Image 1 (cartoon, rainbow, N blue to C red):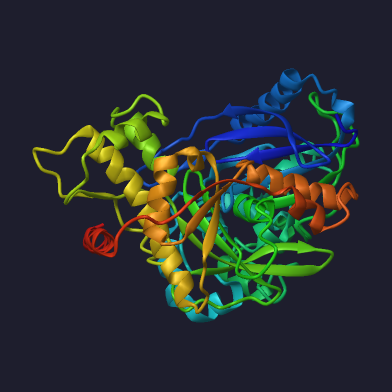
Image 2: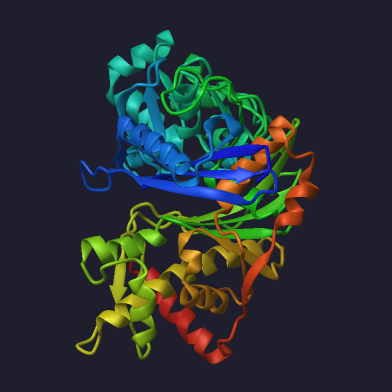
Length: 492
C-alpha cells in the first residue's frame, strides 16, 4: 500500500461516507453512517447538527476499523458536502437552530419578497442564480427575520452562518478555522461570479446578512486549517480540499475541459458542464456556477438540478411500501410490460431547472385498473431520466452540443436507469469504474492542496470507463415518451 493516504469526508443529505484514498486515487476503503431527516411542517426539511456530527464520527471510525489503516497515515483531509443547506452555530460548532436543508421550501415567501425588491435578471447576471428557496441566502434571510435573537447574535459575531463544509471545518478544527470554498460560496447568492472570493456588500444588505457571521472564502484546494481536539483523528492533519458535492463530482469525473459534463444520481440529480474560465450566462433556465478554483484561477460550469432523483425511489420504499429496498426497483421495473399512458413526474420537492417551479407537486398521471406495481417502478425510473433530459435540452439550447455524459452516484449502478437515461438524453451515458467520484474529487483537491498530486494530468490518468450505454429508442417511441412527459409536467 502506498504511503500517502487521504481521508475524504462526503457529507450527504441522508448520511455521511468516509473514504480512505491513496496517492493513485484508488479507494482503500469506505464506511457510511446514516442520520435522520426531520420534517416539522409540510415542505420543511431539517437536520440536527449533533446527529450529522455523530454520523461523521461513526463513518470515520468505521473506515479505519474496516481497513486497519492507522490514523497517523492520513496526510490530508478532503471535504465534500450537500450544498445550500444552512448551518447556524456558535464558535464551538454547536448548532443554534436546526440546519435548514437544501430541499426545504420555507423561504418561498422570502423569494416572493426578493422579486419585488430587486430585479431578478440583475441578480442572475451577478450570481448565476435565481430567487429560489433552494439557495442558502434565502434561508439566511428567513432565519434572521424569524429569529430576532439569532439576528442579534449574528450582528455581534457570536453566531456563524454557513454551508455544511464551513461548519465541518470549524468542528474538525475545534473552532479554530471558519472557511468555505468558492464552489459553496457561489451557491449562497451572497457572492458574485466576477468576484467569488468576496461577499458582496449589496447582496448582503438585500438578504440582511451581516458579513461578520460568514466564513472566509478560499480556493477549492487550499489551507482550510488542521484537525484539533478530536477523539477520532489526531491533531495537525491539514484540511486541504473542499468542494460542494456536485462540483466535487465534476472534478472527480476529470471534466477539466469546456464541454465535458457529468450527471450525479443521488437524492436529487445534478447535471454540470464545464464552461472554462469564463462564466456563461444561461438564457434557458440553467444556473451559472463556480466549478472549482485552483491557485486563484476560477473555472465555471452550467448546472441544472432536479431536486428529486434517488429520493423518488426512497419514497416508493418508505412512503408507499411498494419496494423493500432500492435495489428491488430495477427487478420490478424490468417486469413491467411498458408504462403506456402512465407517467410519473417526481417533483416531490418542486421542479428545479429549467422550470424553477418551487410550488410544483408530484404527479402520477395515466393510472388505469391495469396499472401494476412494476409499472409504477418503471415510470419512476422514466421520470428520473426525463427530468435530466429537460436539463440537457436546456444546455444544448445554449449552443453547446454534448455527445456524451459521465454518470456517478448510487443510482448509477442501476443498468436499466442508465439505459433509460441514454434513451431520454439521446447521448452516450458513460459510467466510470469508480462511481464514488464525489469523494474522489474531494480527495483529488486535498491531494493538490498538499502537493500529493502535482497537477491535473495525474487525476486524468486514473479515470477509466466501466460501461457505456448507447441510445436505442426509435424516433417514434421517443416522441411519444416526450409528449407524455410534457403533458404530465404541466399538471405538476
